[in-house]
Every structure is written in structure tokens, then in C-alpha cells.
Image (cartoon, rainbow over all chains, first blue to last red; front, side, top):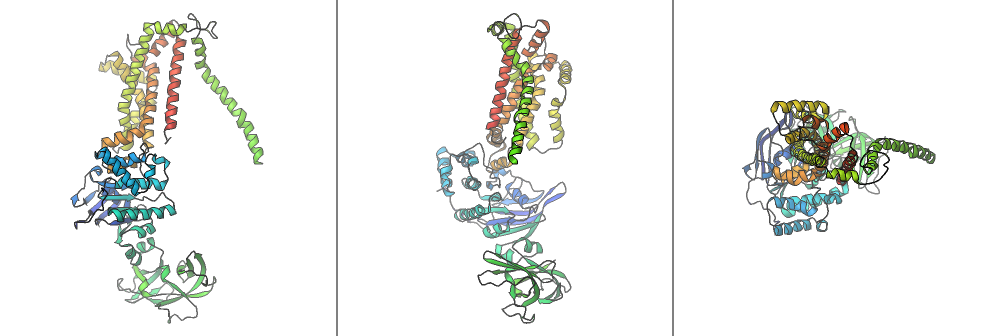
Length: 371
Length: 269
């Protein structure tokens, strides 16, 4: 068996970037960046377009030389080393399969470059074709394949030569939603089975949350926050991170003291403000829609009940059922209605538009962010 | 209503437009086609329609050492010109499309400039140039002179072909471990083949047919087929011209059909 699970036998990281930056004629594509990718890790570079994630990926692949900084792969300094010598694999959004070669020849291509014997090539190509379950398409031209099949061939072409690292640049961007979810599982399966380090670029936060061991969130040519998916979702450190990942309600707030903030409407609510001193400072209070609860208007603001620490009055704007979820839009005096999300059920009651309601949440589910 | 509109539309575009197109086509084609029956006529005078039918004119051509020598020279020159145009034009196109260097646009403009210069001006320039540099080989002069005007066409077709090749294909091959030469010969060149063949056939046809420049720079004893035809029409009006014209037309048509076929097979165009 040539396709073996790669094991993290040494503590050395697979990729280490030291102060890497890239400028084009005065335009900064990537600010000074440090990053470490562990062996066997599935790391996602997430961010909007122009955030520098593709630049970062291409610096690792060697297609772009950094203006400053050093790139280490598996402990050795590869800064300035041509792509061809870095022993990497890359999967492109456009698949980048050679249109003049059959599926078999496409997968055999990296092996032929490595001067592997004909018999060995045949064995290994058929092996990876089995792995991606497309052995029956070996003699087809890529053009005759569907997008999903082409991307699986493109993955097979990477796996076949056992690169130490596979880079993926929005590989599922051209596929429709259903196929994309299927391919996400497929890629995760291959990652678990082969243990290859993977660096994955996407602008789709859901995809990043689903697939990654760790997410590097990028914005404005720099790293905004790094962490495990739940870390980024529950503990964003900036308004950008809170807005980019998941749905969010960001209430305008001004710090009163270490334990409370004043909302736009003048109400003072409990919040952990110790991270954001001093009092008087403007901030945003993040509460995820699923952390908010609707309560009857009859309850007093001082008596939240239901384990809620805060309760503020509002006016129902509208409600809609999205399959298993129900979303209530409530005007609480912010510039736009906030969203309360609950599990839907047949007997769920939605307040009529214009009805007075109370919206509550507990302090541990909220997070104060510097503006 | 849509039926009515469809009907009236078909009435107009169905007859008038194609009819006009056919007339224009016939008008353009007739001069070339008329030599074909003439070429099967009498060996002594050009006449349409011919009074008698024969292969005499073709026989005359293939028995005349001078005509054959001219044709042979034209063929050799055209082949060399095509080879040089490809050898210089394809790499130049590659550099212009894939490269990043200062003055790139100006270099591209410079390399394509022979297309913009009137043939007669280029011819005069080349004449003076060869006089000054002392390049005196008759055939060499023809090949070099014609290469200057055919190379831009090879560059243009190769450049447009290259623009249709996804640069990620080359990037993918590179990351998989292929060196620049491997990438060029195993990925770029095979994908560029239809454009290169198209450019080559075009260069061949142009250099085989070229009169103006060849006339200026060829020396005594190096008479290409078109030059010989040209002088023959001035001095003797030999009916054998009709036979040669027919054969040239046939070659052109075959080459153009070949180009069309190759380009249709090319999935990207």
C-alpha cells in the first residue's frame, strides 16, 4: 500500500511563516504575518475576497514570492525555492485538469514527472481512482465529467504522489450547494484517512466551520483571528469576526462599569465589560440569534426569569419559519430589528406584527466587543 | 402574432439577405473561379469558355524547367519562412502573454508592427536593409524578408491561443513538480497545437503567395513562382498562368479547410 496515513512523528510544524508580507507597487496584499500549521492539521484560511487569503496560500505554494519574511515547510527554509521543488499538491477552483489528457493520464502526470515505472504508475493511479470511486472513468477526457467528478479527479491527482501538504483554493466554489456538502464530507473523509496536512481557502464561513480543525480568519490583508471553529463562533474578538462568522445581533452599547453597559435606548443591561475599559467607551454587544429568547410583554424588566439575566422591551416586526427554525424580527430601538431564533414546532406561537414583546438573554451568551 | 412576425421575418431574412449575400459572394468568387475552366483549355490562348478541353496547360507547366524551378524555390522559401516564423513567433507569443516585464506592451506592438506597415514600404525597407548589411544569399534574403511579415501572424494566432489556456493548468503542473520546459512541452504546447498549426498554414500560404516584398528583395536567378507569374503576365501572357492559378487556388482552399477543421476540433474556440 503506497497511500499511507502520514503520521506526525516529530513535533515540527508542517508550515511556518515568519513575518511574511507581500506588496504590489505600494498596494499591500498581505501585511506581516506569522502562521504555524501543524502536521496532519486541516487549516482553513477564511475571509472575504481581497482579504489576502489567496496571497497567503500562493506564498506557501511558491507561486508568489513574499516581499519580506521567511517560509518554512517541514522545518526547512523554502523561501525562494521554486514551486516545483516544494513537494506540494494543489487543488484549484477551476479543477485545472489537462483537457488534452484522459483521466488516467492526468493522474499519472505527476508520477511520470517523477519517473515512476509504468507498472507502478498503473497500480497507483488505479488505487487512487478507487479511493475517489471513479475507476470507471479512467479513459474519459475531463470535459466529459461533471464538476464534482472533475474535482475528485483533481484530488486524486494530488493524493497519488503523496505530497506533504495539499493546498486547496476554493475547490468547491464552482459547485452547487448540495454537491458542495457532499464534497466537503468526501474531502474530510480523505483527510482523516490519509492524515495529509491540508490548507483550505474559502470565503464560505459555513464550509470553514464544518471542515476545519482550525480557522484563520483574514480581513484587510492580515489575520483577524485564529482559532478552532467553536472558538471563533462563540468567542469572536472583533466586530468583523462576529459579523463574518454566523449570524449576529450587534447592539450599540456604552460601558457603564465592569458588569454593565447602557444600550442605545438608555436601558442598562448586565454584560461582562472587564475586557473593555474604561467606562464611557463605545462598544458592541454581540448576542447570537439563537441565544435570544422571546418572553411575554407582561414580565417586568427587573424579573427576567427563565434563567435569563437581561430582558428588554421591543415590538415584533415579523416572524418567519425557515424549516426547523423560526426567526422573529424585533424592533428594540436599534438601527435595525434584531433577530431572535428559536426551534420551530407545530404549536410555536409567533407574536403578531406590532405586538409588544420582551427579548431576553443571559450574560454568558453575550459578548462585548470594542467598536 | 409571433407567428406573423416570424413569417415576415423569414420572408425577408429568408430570401433577400441570403440572395444578396450570394450575389456578393459570386461577384467576389468569380474572378478566381473563372481561371479554372480556362486552365483546361487550349495551349495557345487564354479563352473563356475554352473551345477545346485538355490538360495541355498543366503538361506545359510540368515540362517547363523554369516554371518548376520557380515553384520549387517558392516551396523551399515558404517552408523555411514558416519554420523560422514558428521558431521565433511561438516563444515570443509565450513571453508576451505569460511574462511580466517592463516594456512588454511596446515590445508586443513592435513585434506586430510589420502588419501595420504597407507591404511596399516594408519591401523598400528590406531592400535598403539588405543592401546595407550585405546579406547577399538570394534564398536567404527571401526567407528573412518574408519571415518579417509572416511572424506577426504566427504571434497573433499563438497569443490568442495562449489567452484561451487557463494559466492554472501551467501552475498545477508546476506545483506537481514539473520544470518550466516540461510544463511548456507537455502542457502548453499540446494545448496550443491548433493555434500553432493554424498560424503555420497561414504563414506558409502568405510566404508562398507573396509578390511585393519578394519582387523587391529577390536577386537575379531567384525567381519565385508569384514573381515569375507576375513578369510572365507583363511580357508574354502565357496561358499556363491559368493552370498555375488553378493549382494555387486548390492549395489555398485545401489549407483554409484544414485550418477550419482544426479550429472546429479545438474545444476552446
